[in-house]
Amino acid sequence: MSKINKNDINKVVLAYSGGLDTSIIITWLKENYDCEVIAVACDVGQDEELEGLEQKALNSGAIKYYAIDMIDEFVDDYIFEALKAGAKYENNYLLGTAFARPLMGIKLVEIAKKENADAIVHGCTGKGNDQVRFENAIRAVDADIPIIAPWRTWEIKSREEEVEYAKAHNIPLKEKNESPYSEDRNIWHISHEGLDLEHPDTEPDFDNMLTLGKTPQQAPDKEEYVEIDFEKGVPVAVNGKKMKGSDIVRTLNKIGFENGIGIDDIVENRLVGMKVRGVYENAGGSILYKAHEILETLTIDRDTLHYKQKLALDFAEVIYNGLWYTTLREALTAFVNKTQETVTGTVKLKLYKGNIINAGVTSPYTLYNEEYATFGEDGVYDQTDSQGFVNLYALPIKVQTMMKNNVEKNKNEALGK
Image (cartoon, rainbow, N blue to C red; front, side, top):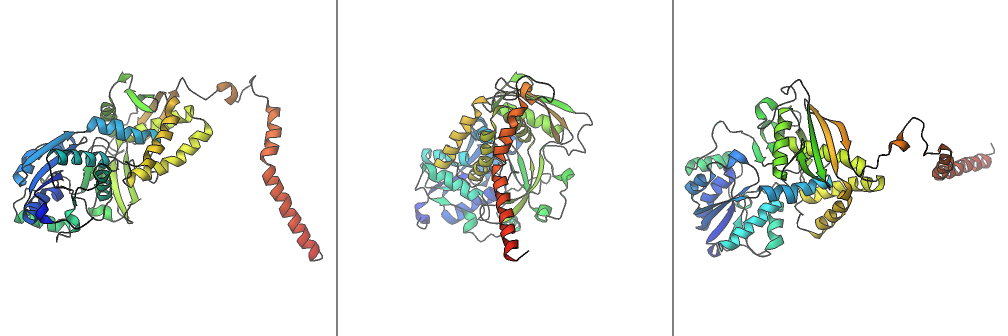
């Protein structure tokens, strides 16, 4: 894409969070592009973080502010798609930030077209994954609109310099009681990065870091049980009460955070090549993933389940790398949806001081047959049938052993032994 001509930029749409980056970007854009700025806040469940955001954006110089409620669409069409796949990046990270960005990118384009904006602006750094996720999503629906990423071009090189810029331009900063960590929050999780977490040999100060949950030590000394109903891989009820997806996540967050569930300290490999460390609070997500995995062990045949488990890593990488709007992701989803046709049933879990323990599972599509599985006497399984099966199954190993023995015998004969 050719270099952006500043004279062509009269109005822009900014992905606005109210954090340090996007707060100073409004002033920076007016200084460097002499353009109007429309601030767009995408509500994916940040809750109180959105309070006062409109006034802050307007006070910072924006001419208009949009708050787009995306919560239900985010949960139903993105989170639950990843849940059905069992997608965990590097088998750890539950993708809370990664699968929020594609939907945000689409919404930014919609507002840009509505407002006849000349460009879209984001506050992602050149070191992170989000720049790729945002821009891939934007390009999926608009091949040509200019994208401005100030972190790639401005003179500011650190958060300390951002603070100095904000003070010099009278831009309101965070309240003193807010977290000093770099954070991303939505209905699915909250992440914490930076400061002491940049040193892998340092134990996180959970007591002063956690925003939503309790540590296992702070959790009650009594277990709590929860039941989750699924239909075709999608959670539909908690403790017998039917509710929409976003309410299920909120309900399980509340239960899980109270019991010290879902605190993960992870080092992950970013798309741009570096390793980074983050602490994630992911109570509801951890509960749902565990329940879904348990139900699948009962309802999916061995070969399909094993293949799906391998595919889950690929699915997670596709999401993590910002490739949601691709043929590959759609094809993977089609496979996943086929596997979920019988993933219907109820899972009971016991939560205790950070632990999620299987307490029972039922399904009308269960493949578990007690007559075949019992260690007691049964009338359906003839154990003499296994002899031929074991002989054939072991045949490749037997032939290889015979070959090794012959090679060794011939070698000894050649040496005159």
